[in-house]
Length: 419
Image (cartoon, rainbow, N blue to C red):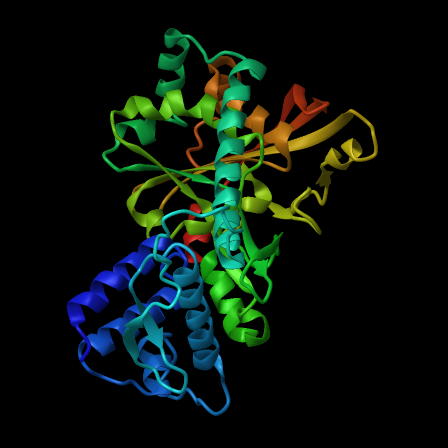
């Protein structure tokens, strides 16, 4: 007879391993089956589709194999756990073939410690795959830390306290610092997932522009069950190198509010933040995520054929980044920085600090963090509280050498929230 407490305890260890991903379909399927097994319930395929995977009551199990795909994937993850991090477990959770019910069985992979061993055998392939996952995470974390450290030596020192007082009092920043709403910095990231082989080892990492979060990866694998077994959520994103110096410029301003400043990735941003927090976006224009729909709904500008191009809807002028010159061996090029600030739908404020590429993003953040350039921006904007601005930035070998403020134009916040 199944011991519910034993099953729950062993299920917790599987969740803690991270092999099921971050609260996705696979994790929900596992939780649902654990709950059913504890209650002595053996669910049908349609029950799993509706109650665990969020399908409608009209779901047809004869036409859609999504339940069988995820059940097969869960069995593979359980095998991976007990061949790797759960190898020492005396019992294992089993999802028997032909059934949708969990049970406990002796773990055949359980290793009894020998008195002596002539040599350490090579790790199982699944263990190596698990180690690779965490290697990717460690490399990503190391890269971001190094970028932050490099930024201290490469970019200019933050302004003195007297200058910070002037910056904080500027009408761009003062509404955020004086209200009682939380401040959330949204960082434009780029989601990466893994492709695995038959042994569940990650063979390569994939950046697919149509898949920008683990939720979108789940939706994609549901629509394409032929790849669901191969694609794995690694919990990885990468950031543009200019995000580190941009945050270094902006954090001294925002942290003065005396409130906790929260940082979230654009791929993990939820729409509710737009109504209950002051939002500051930092990143490329291409990394805006769901913010893009709001930012350009009331804008005079539009994204061109690529995110390296902005089009002035009124004049028809195209502003095209020349950052590709770096790939052609030309160290000098022109880039464009974008800024906007507008009221939210619930009395909050939204601030966008963006660029087509790195030198433009770094320059825009600097312009907003220093009293002279910030004063020029607000003088040109006049009495407008909701407006946008465009900077032309001159780069040389990855450094923003010079820039000029091209234009400031009013925004229509009513159009933003109406859309």
